[in-house]
Picture 1 (cartoon, rainbow, N blue to C red):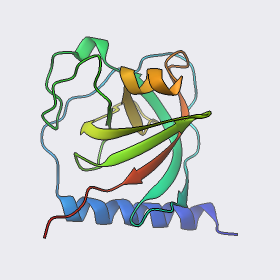
Picture 2 (picture 1 turned 135 degrees about the vertical axis):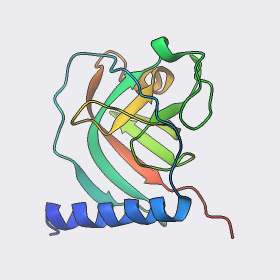
Picture 3 (picture 1 turned 30 degrees about the vertical axis):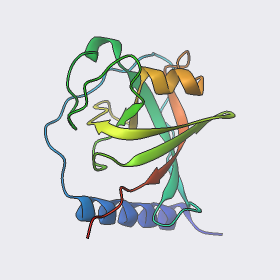
Picture 4 (picture 1 turned 45 degrees about the vertical axis):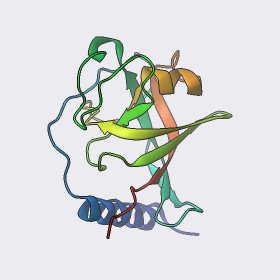
Length: 152
């Protein structure tokens, strides 16, 4: 069985490789946690079936209403129907499939955040609602990260 330390190292290397290929993102704007419950959990990672992607279990929050109509760090105008996610380091355009309970939603990295310690993801309100995560507000969630395709 693979140790947590090894799994974290592999996930870290994969994330670093994705960042080196895509380059850094621009300006930072953050989200606001949508709820009060939940304690950040210890992250775990495992390989995904898709090439170049990986799965992690980390804490998330959701945001949106106070930022609707504003431009995100990646240039998207945030609306009530936006299916997106904020992450501190993943490149803009990275596809992330979130699974919570039996629901699964794919979102694109469109913003920077969350800026609260212990949280890895800031889901838009629409993503949180589709997952059934809205009432929870914050807590652990499974995410499968697929880096954006590289252009030759």
